[in-house]
Length: 171
Image (cartoon, rainbow, N blue to C red):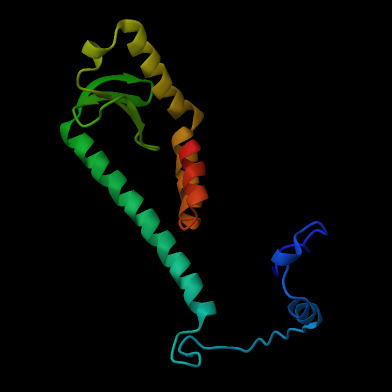
């Protein structure tokens, strides 16, 4: 109730707060006292001071989130590099195939490449192959991988918010 607007007049009386409670809330005065604190200060009751703990938890979560994704990407990239076979080059983009990927994928910001699945030529006809290649190369030309990196950084800052994860997947 402290952050919501007043209840409309048509709201049922049985669901309204008691008159005394409403009057007490309206007439209450709050005082915010800010005092300097040191990192080793402990709040009464023996627990750590929340204004210092919450930012540390948030930052720790963001660091762990980004580290998790970087490690997963490095493992995926290593698995591809261990099994990849060069096929061709399209400008500065190396094209290779690997049994690790189930579908064509664009990788790398500096070492740009497109990795094709092992049975790419057997599963797709010539027109589908050309379309898939143009699609993956377009990711590199438009800078989609850079945008994905920035989006992952923003998601790391909002790691605790389920709506941010949904928005990232939609992005």
